[in-house]
Amino acid sequence: MPLECFVVEPTTVVLERAERLLMIHDLRAADAFQLSAALVLFQEKPASYYFVSTDLRLIGAATREGFF
Image (cartoon, rainbow, N blue to C red; front, side, top):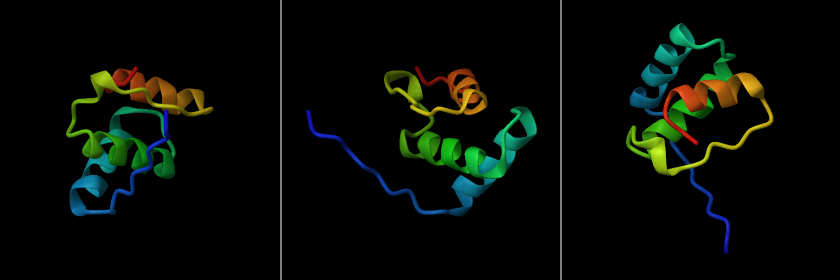
């Protein structure tokens, strides 16, 4: 199975979502931006997708946001 790669531009929507994530989760700014980009990419419907990271805080936030 080939791997897929996506590039998400740092739009206003992504930045605003990252700001919200920083307010409700214990994340660093770069991690909030990464999670925000993933949520925007999957149109706020992450339930069918895995979020992969070695950072346990980021994984916890992604799980609370609906990722596997």
